[in-house]
Image 1 (cartoon, rainbow, N blue to C red):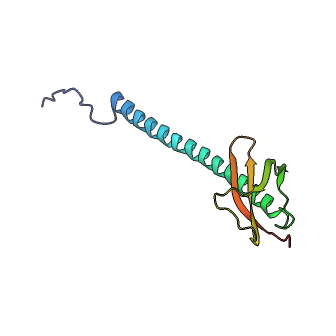
Image 2 (spheres, rainbow, N blue to C red):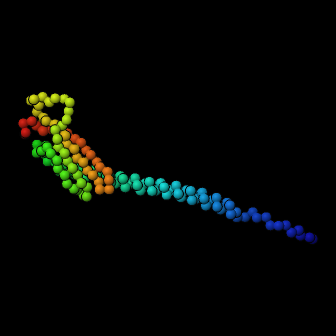
Image 3 (cartoon, rainbow, N blue to C red):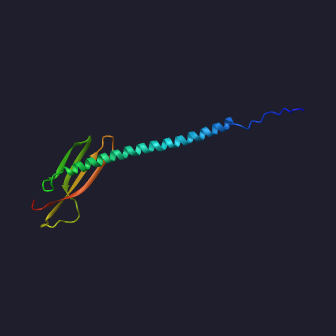
Length: 133
């Protein structure tokens, strides 16, 4: 009995080319995921800064004096590391107020500036009785 010697056929395992293609696909996937994570971190930081400015604005507005004691002018300060600025001025309108109007509108603008950048501006109207009561 004669056994023929045949060269071994390589059928098991990966070739070097297949391994490189698989590694490049994994690298592209990881790079995409890394980009998404980086964008999410930036977005979360932006939202946190905006919420800090918003909470500071709410605290400043809550601390404003009563509408009868709120005098026209400017005031400013700092709260929780956030500089704030409040402007109270006559309300600008095209409609002429009646001479015997019971209420006088005033514009109140609260501006919060964040040290890393970005501002939040809230505008509202405060009504004051014309007789000062």
